[in-house]
Amino acid sequence: MKVLITGTSQGIGKAIAVLFLERGHQVIGIDRQQKSIEHSQYQHYECDVRDKDHLPGIPGVEILINNAGTQNKADIDINLKALIHITETYGIQPCIKSVLNIGSASGHTGAEFPEYCASKGGVLAYTKNVAMRIAPFGATCNSLDPGGVLTPLNECVIHDPVLWGQIMEETPLKKWATPEEIAEWAYFLTVTNTFCTGQNILVDGGESINYHFVWKE
Ligand SMILES: NC(=O)c1ccc[n+]([C@@H]2O[C@H](COP(=O)([O-])OP(=O)(O)OC[C@H]3O[C@@H](n4cnc5c(N)ncnc54)[C@H](O)[C@@H]3O)[C@@H](O)[C@H]2O)c1
Image 1: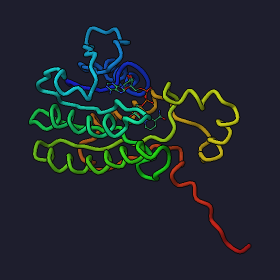
Image 2: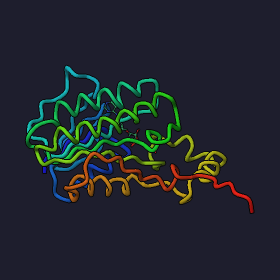
Image 3: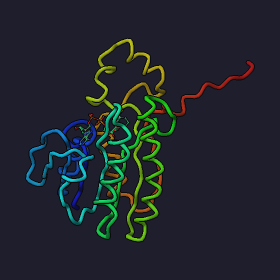
Image 4: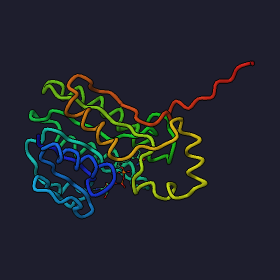
């Protein structure tokens, strides 16, 4: 299938692109960084997803995976507004089979930085909006909402033993996901799945259900 993925130069987006290429799909990547994948079926556009005037023309996208994201003051512009524009440009058309938005557990819990969790909360709601609008094409739209993933975005805490210990205290399964594990979920939700739509799928090692039951012994 013809697969468009944003943010393919590193981290989760790169792992998703590599998995789709290994399984015989044509992959087009958009990233503001230069190409980091060499494959005959991979085409790279070095472009900022916010740059409406310079986004490439790509007709007939069958799978769209909105992955490009950040954790800084541009969160709303990149994680939410650009994601909406990318989806309206490439995803709402008759060839589409599936749209997957990479959300975050923080869109469910409200944890992390204010702009970040607000941007991801918006992604969760927009996912439902898109699901209704592409259902007439027989297409699905879901969000895949990870907890911690071992990517360059998180290197500052992954390599700090004290902070890492605190993070593991908050994570019932006592580990973070690899980008390759998240890529398998992305593949399942867009290729294998044809009936689950409009859902926000949490893959977070139990982080968001880490409650403390208080009761008299
Ligand atoms: N890593 C985690 O723990 C985690 C957890 C939950 C959700 N997520 C989400 O997963 C997605 C990917 O995160 P990651 O950890 O792989 O991050 P990352 O920083 O390792 O990779 C992000 C990629 O997106 C690209 N990108 C960022 N802004 C862009 C822009 N404006 N235009 C074009 N390209 C842009 C970057 O160049 C980079 O290649 C993000 O949406 C992030 O919010 C990550």
